[in-house]
Image (cartoon, rainbow, N blue to C red; front, top):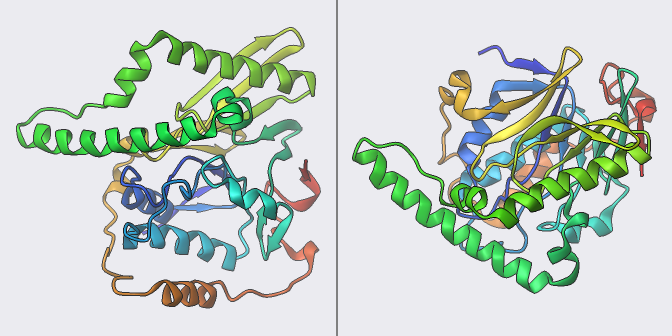
Amino acid sequence: MAKREVDIVVLSDIHLGTYGCHATELLKYLKSIKPKALILNGDIIDIWQFSKRYWPSTHMMVIKHIIGLVAKEVPVYFIPGNHDEMLRKFKCFNLGSLKIVNKLSLKIDNKRLWVFHGDVFDVVMQHSKWLARLGAVGYDTLILINRFVNYISQKMGRGKLSFSKKVKNSVKSAVKFINDFEDTVCDIAAESNYDYVVCGHIHHPEIKDVPTKNGTVTYMNSGDWIENLTALEYNDSKWTIYNYTDDVVAQAIEINKKKNGGQSSKEMMASLMLELKVKRYKQEKENMHSPLAPESVQHI
């Protein structure tokens, strides 16, 4: 199958290691595309809720696919979020074409783009981390119950329901938080002369122009792979929201879930490193035809 070429793909809030993660669907999407650059914008692995008792083969296959892109010298930028915040101490770490940074400032087609996860604007995260962790566990439990209800609903010939979406949309404070989040992000981006700002964190896919006192900024959010199954794609000088539920090509891809079955953690890691085949190569050789070539990327 010919893969669809995409200049830049932005993924966030995958939450590998949780029951709510749609790793199979994500893997199908990744196998259907050929990105020139990949930005992982936080909460990729949910270290908060990570358990050795729950790590399906498809979750490891997602990691292996990303490492496979690194082995092919595709630029991969990992921006840790609050659920994988322990990786922030490794900022500026480089391994081949994989780079861990806290934020990215990019220049694409003469437009300035600011990319970061977004939890820095979450008051609960900054002042009550224990409450945020408790909320994350509750959210994962709600998603698990939601899946069971949807299984019964589909057997009865009815459509799917989203409990958390209904809660978010019905609670005025939740809607206000999203609006305040977007306005705050765009105000700061405009003050720093950015044309675009890309976030994750709030699980709400969006592309819209936001007017500020310093000019209009295009706000974008890549959504998540818990409920929305979305990503941001940049192609032909245009940003769009990718939605897995609309992609019949990706949905038709078959995944062998038993491919990594029975492997221990050490065996899986050895397999990853073998696939990566880390090599030292000159910086100027990296991705000369990529829209995120080194001269257009500034780490901040």
